[in-house]
Length: 64
Image: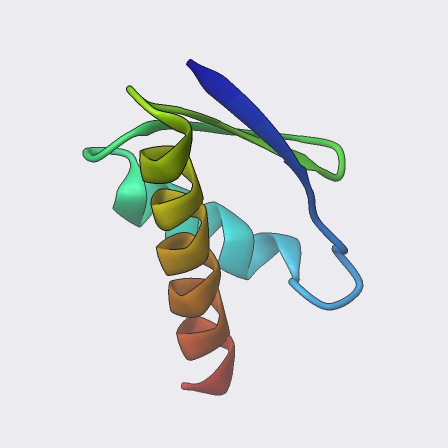
């Protein structure tokens, strides 16, 4: 299963997004294409959890 999320790259800089994607790559297939993030996982709930954790991690990277 795959879900696509629109990302505002004016808020989330590409460097931080790419770092977060790389760090999460062992857990799920995550692809950033333009302003869309596609996450693959077994269920919609799992995908949403991965997305939420990924974005929280991205915010943490920005605030470091």
